[in-house]
Image 1 (cartoon, rainbow, N blue to C red):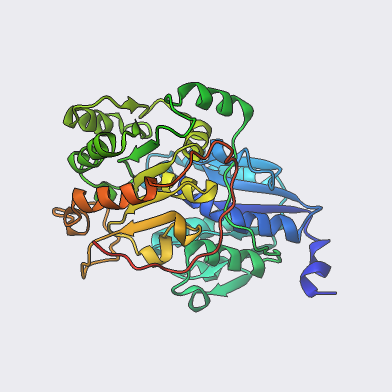
Image 2 (tube, rainbow, N blue to C red; image 1 turned 120 degrees about the vertical axis):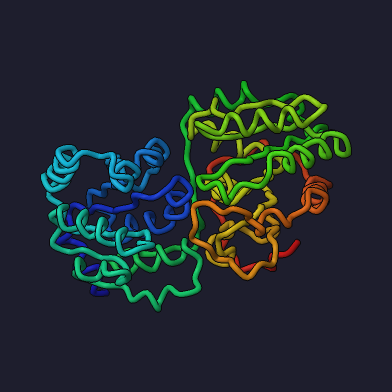
Length: 378
C-alpha cells in the first residue's frame, strides 16, 4: 500500500486554495481532479476568487466552493474587519489539509497566501516553496521541479505531492442545463455546417494582452467576406466598449454578446464555435477544455508555460519574436509583442482552420490532451 493512501484516511476535510483567475481555475481542473482521486471519501472544499466561483460551482470534484475577494484584498479595498471575518469562517470549517495549487508570483502574493493557509487552521499545508511561501508550509514542493513546465502540469505536481492521484485526462469546464438552453437560443443561424461560426474574443485581464480592436475587426471582416462566416463578439463585464469599437470598424453585421453572457453561458457557447480567435485569456483556456479550434494572439506571457492545454492540432499560436517576453507588467507604452502581429497573418491562419471543418454540435464538457510547446511565430 502506498504511503499516500495510508495518509488519506486521516484527511477528512480538505481545502484546495485557488484564488486566481477564471482561466487559472480551468487549468487547475486536472489538479483538482487529482485531489479528488486521491481522497475519494474526503470532503473537498475549493477556495476560489469571486470571479471564478460561479464556474467553479459546476465542478463535480468539490463538495463546496468558498468565494474569496482576492482582487479587493490585493488592491487594499478590502477592510480589515471583513478580512478577519473571512479568515474566521475558514478556520471554523476544521480543515485537515490545505493545498495551494497556484504558484505565487511575488513575495507579497506569497505572504498573502501564507496568511490564508495559516488561518485555515489546517495542520498540513502543501504548496510551492517560492517567494517565501515555504515558511508557511508543512510540505514544500521545490520550485525547481516545476521550472519550464506548463502551469497545468505544475499544479498537478503540487496535487500529487499532497496525496492526489493524477490521471491521463485533460482540463475540463462544466455548465448547467439553463446555460445550455440560453446558449442554444443565442447561437446564430447556420449550425447545419453550411455557415461557419467564429467567435472573436478581444478582451483580457491586462491591457497589454489585448490586440488592437481594429486588427480584430479586419480579421472578422475578412472571415465574413472570404469564408461567409457568422461572427460572434465575446467579452466580459467592462469589455463592451472594445466589442463596440470592432463593430464600428466593420461593414458587415456581427452578433455582439460582450457583457451579455454568464460564465457558464460563455463556456457553452465557445463549445459550439467552429473557431475562436482570441487573446491570451480565460476564453482561450475554455476553448482548450472543450476542444474548440482556436487562433491565439500571445503578448507578454510565455507561451511555453501558458499555451492552450489541448491537442496541438486544435490551436495556432501567433506571437512576435521580441526579447522582452516574458513580461510581468500590467501595462506597456508600446506593446511590440502584439503590435508587430499583422491582421493578414491572423486571417490566413483562421481561414486554414475553417476549411474542411464541420460544426461541433455535439461537443460538451471536454477534456484535453497533454501537449508540448509549439513554435510561436508571426
